[in-house]
Structure formats: structure tokens, C-alpha cells
Image (cartoon, rainbow, N blue to C red; front, top):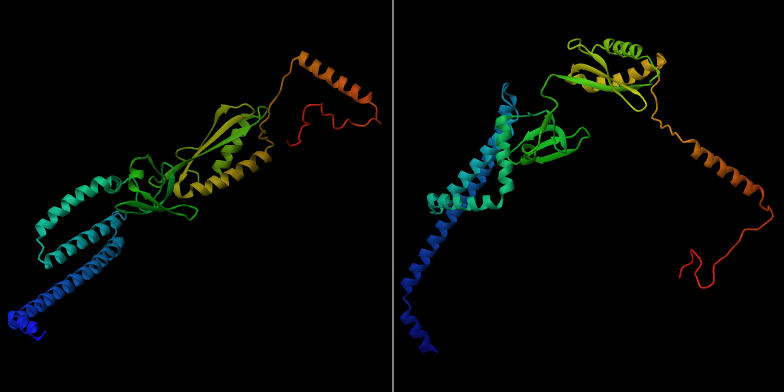
Length: 326
């Protein structure tokens, strides 16, 4: 055993082992320093990206003349750019060539883009919405089955809230591919209301009553002039339509108030609003048959024996009575 140890010690050079250990320690120390620098760069880059995005939101949010719809997507773009360059610098610290990394990243981005076509469509749609700007922050819009007040337009989705206090996150591609109705873009809106009156009512008198209701409300614009027109002759009523222009901010209040005032004014003028009804016309032959059937039915009832008992259990032989399970 001693001879084997002596032979191994003769072949192993102690200086070489010490040199290898020293090189390994240097490499480990250098790698630890690079790793620490890379981690510090990444952490500092993410913090800087967040601070830069917050600064853009705060600074541009207080500047007059800057469209607030552009602020969120600008802040997100700056944040992602800072994170990207931070990652490139961290990799370069390990000796990785940035040109090769960018080339690999471009190829990977192409593959990811083909796999995530829907996500890229949202990005492209978000950019187009910001360029064309069919709506802005604070506008109430409808697109397809979605409606709400716009809070923020980002790279991937638009955030809105409804009048019921619900939060909605809508992908930008849905907004871009549907017809967008903006209820807040124009300063005025037209109020339309249909009123049905009886065929026996005086249309001219009804028109005067409705016009007076409109003229007594200061929220109704005098230009264009409010109108009361005959829209249609319905099945059970003459349908009149009120058309009046008002400020966009007063639209819903005017809607609710005029509905109440119109009903009270018509009641005061004794103008009735008919209920839907259906008139059935029968031929004399059908009436005669119906009257004859009623007479026979009354005769059969009067001629029956009051003390007779109803028949029970009349099931035929060989057949199962009804409502009895097998």
C-alpha cells in the first residue's frame, strides 16, 4: 500500500496541482464578478425602465396640448427599449458578441412572430389607433359588442370602464376590426323620442303641446330648431317623433326629463296614449256555430243527473290504464 502511494506521489506534480487550483480560483472569482455585474445591470435596468415610464406618464400627463392617449404607449415603448439594451449589456459583460446575439434574436423574433400573430396584430392595431386616433382618453365608445369610457390605450389592449363600474380590457385588434362609434367626439347630439297617440286625438293640438314642452326647456337648442313630425301610422296609434338638439353633456338628463314632462303634458291636455290591442273579426257562420255549441253544452249540463257519480277506473281489459307506470 505504501509503495502505491509513493508511485502516485512521484507521478503527480504538486506545482501543477497548485497552478490549476490557482487558475480555477481566478476563473471562479472573475465569473462571480461578471455575474454580479450582470445581475446589477439587469436590476438597475428594470428599475430605470420603470422610473422612466413613470416619469413620462407624470410629465406628459400635465403638459397641455399633448394627447393623453399617446402617453401610455410611449411610456411602455421606452420601458421595453431600456430593458432590451440592459439585457444586451448584461450578455456583453460575459463576452458574448452583441452582433451575433442581435442576429439570433432577430431570427427568434421572426419565429415568435409567426407563432404569435394575434399578439402582433394587437401591437399593429394599437399603433394604427394611435396614429389615426378615432378616440381619445375619456371618450365613450362602442365597437361591436363592447362599450365603455376609454382609460388607456397600450401596445396590446385598450382599457375601459363601463357605466356600471366594470373594468374591460379589449384587445386592440378587436377595436381596429370593428366599426367604432364615438359618443364624445362631437359637442352636440340630437335627442329623438317617439310618442304614440290615439287615432281619435287631434294631431295639431298634440304637436303644439309637445313643441311647448321643448321650448320651455332651456337645454334644447333653438338652432337647429326642434321638430315634432308624424313618423308613421301604426297598427293602434299615430306615431309622432320629437327631434331636438342639445349639448352632449346634457343629453341623458334631457332624455330622462323630457320623457317625464311629455307624459305629464299629454295627460293634462287629455291626449291619450293608446295601449296595443288586437281586434278579432269573425264571420256569421263561425258565430252561429259557436253559439250553437254553447247551447248544446248548457243543455247537456242541465239534463245530467246531479246525483250520478263519476266513472272511475275504466281501463279496458288487455290495456294498461293511463298514468300508471309499467
